[in-house]
Length: 155
Image 1 (tube, rainbow, N blue to C red):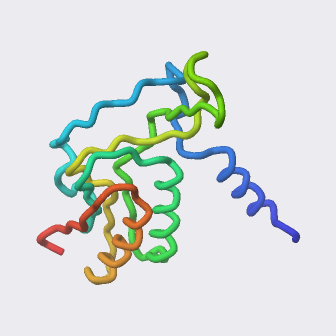
Image 2: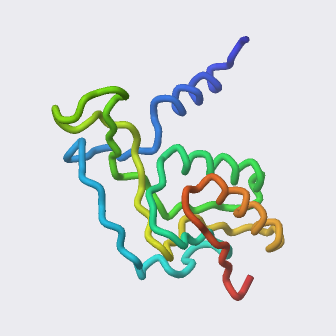
Image 3: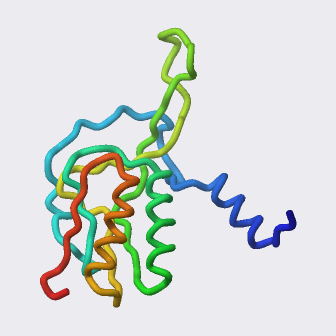
């Protein structure tokens, strides 16, 4: 199979440069305690339609990438997407069949913290409301927590 240079660069970018912070002070952190509300992100700021989290949870960089892939395929450049979340928390894990102790495990992946009421994705598009809502419901299947679709009253 023959690949062009741009396809090869894109493949390398996906494999090696997952969503993660450029610089970080500590490689391994403790997990956060779930808090109920973050009032700054309860309302839409940029888009007309958004995906709002109902439960508290962690969202990994792989899940954010898969949602981005679904939305970009379905919208087909007919809209703009904003992600209000970034994976800035390292998740560690020990290998399988390793005894307890001897320090914290190696870095497994990066994840972001989502509280209930947090708007994860915002979309502005010239498509009708039903199409955008169905696209966001398809994207919410990839998430590990319950979500609802919200929209501006002007839309």
